[in-house]
Image (cartoon, rainbow, N blue to C red; front, side, top):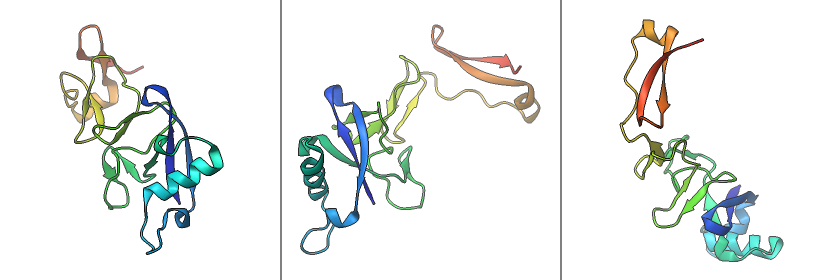
Amino acid sequence: MAHFAKIGLNSKVLQVLSCGNKDLLDANGKEDERLGQQHLEKYNHWPTQLWVQTSYNTISNTHKLGGTPFRGNYAGIGYEWDEDNQIFWPKSPYPSWVKNTTTAEWESPSGPPPVLSAEEEVTHEYIWDESAKSWNKVARF
């Protein structure tokens, strides 16, 4: 089964639909994204160029079955389609976070939080402080 994201204004994903793999096969039996787009336009009345194929098995630019990752992340409603980088992005967790186009993940401007010891992991965690643009260690409740 092939999955496609319906793209709206500001490159936002409005919907994700599937179609049968047979709808993507050309006369030589080779998969062609354009055929899936044409199929979806015909039955959903949304322009061909606004359907973008996405991979159900891709997250953080890794294919969970060991295959080739496709377009960074599986698209979800509200995601942003980044045509230049060919990546579907979830909403940024914080305004200061930046896109890592290699991992297809948002990253804090100060990097990942410090590593806690095994003892500390039970009693503490790090949370992001957007105003200070840093990680704060807090007690778990």
